[in-house]
Length: 54
Image 1 (tube, rainbow, N blue to C red):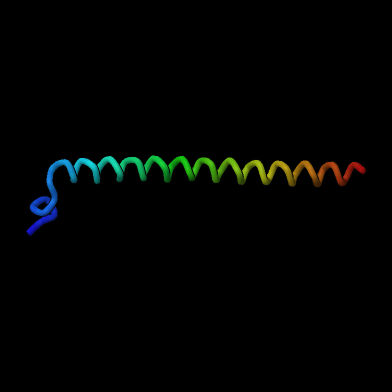
Image 2: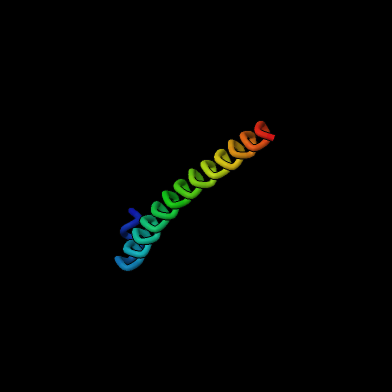
């Protein structure tokens, strides 16, 4: 017995849509994490510059 024997076509379609959405969300999360990391590094670099000038 295979999964396709147990699931109906609409269930398989739903699972595929959920899988696709999950991949997209994981990619978006990766990009957001990179952005936050960049912002964090930039802020600390600016703080170090400001401290060295004072």
